[in-house]
Image 1: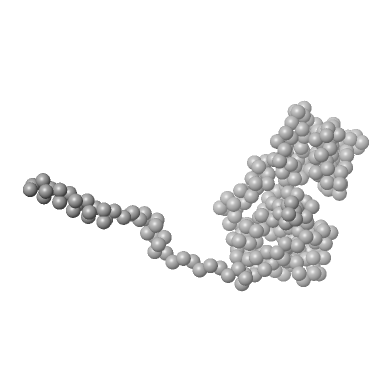
Image 2: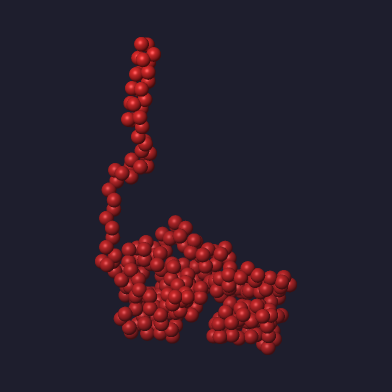
Length: 274
């Protein structure tokens, strides 16, 4: 009889425990369940800004294999738009149209394509705060340890036509016959790979992107003067649009602070551009 009573007690206790065997909510789950879900943003009601860019200036602005505009600048501006609650629409225009787009054509609000902030341009458009610097650098093959930022002028140097690298090369390469001009940095890079030239001189970000994609090449930054003046890049905005400019600058400030901008830099340049 006693054994029967003990068995009943055990069964009863087991039943009560089983009935109470429910997962315990964590503090985070409890708080989350108490919070009301934020209403979804109706994106169709967000302001829409049209952005002109090139499609021939990788890694800042180019097209992928599907013909979709992509690049470092594109990623940054998309992130800013998300952060500041506005929409953007990209249109591809040649660089030669930037001034017309932002002074005469009503359809363009922003221009981006790795654009250097310059005083003469500031007279025509407004610039955002800088999102990165882009100095001059050199790129060489991995087996070229004898070439340095100090002596590269003694070797065959490839530069992109109609770029500031041409002027820099002319001031640093004693024999003008050693300066080889190419329609693009990528064609200069191809000549470097084929050992037709020894060095490519060009924009830091462009060459860093090449070095990230092809680790068999070495990237070295070349500061060209003692003051270490930096070329700052920014977004161009049509004059008279302080709301757009403020949103871009506030978005930049926030993605710099939360580390999102650094993630995009690493995606396109590795750890070669800070």
